[in-house]
Image (cartoon, rainbow, N blue to C red; front, side, top):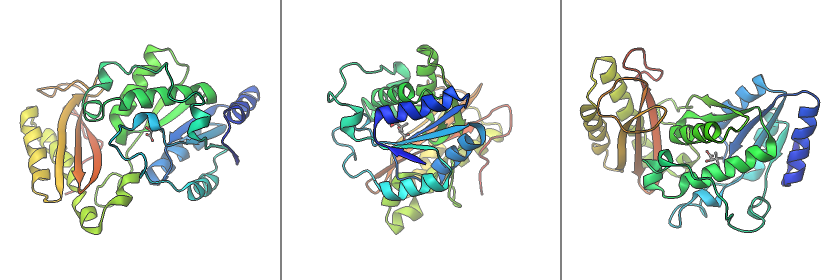
Length: 292
Ligand code: PAF
């Protein structure tokens, strides 16, 4: 595996693979790698000749009061994991390498889809995500880029950017990796105390309840949201940020379920903010059936 912190090194490795006719697959990450990342990399490994992974905690997507400084970082462990996963190129740039002139003056506007929900709770977040992802796509030139459904709004925003800007890359969505009790695997889970860890599955349980109600015929989003909020409200260590049901593609909130939709939740467990979501399929079987 080639490990480089250098933009030219990354570009050259990917160009050489393309020149040999290989398909380049790309998994952008912020490190603190876990089972969710491993599944994206495994999929890329199956489908592509060269697999590139970036590890970069992007300052642009963190607000002034967010957890940039304390975001979990373990570069040596991450690089060893990438090596074991059969990655070809690991890109580990510094902030100066990514943004040599400081904060970029030209950034990617994520549009209305980037202002709702996560974008409302975290102003500027999706502008930061789109800007770094566009830069990384420019450096890697991937045919396929792999994103987890755990960050469903990020996935929708990136897809929209790729469509609207005609970027020549296929965005491949990958299912959320979950712990045995349903908790979505996330780098931030490491921050939970044992009590908080026990409380954290309430996010998934509230989503699973909504999916179960939809399978039983419920279409009124007011009812679904009330049920989701009720489950989180029963957990003393949890503080709800939002529950929502959105159209899968536009991320606009809906009042009644008709087509492909997603139930979303964001909550603080202690001081750690977690998000999760599941698809809701009014006409068919849910991809994330309730566990109880
Ligand atoms: O999902 C993440 O880890 C980040 O938002 C991403 C896509 C690597 C951009 O910094």
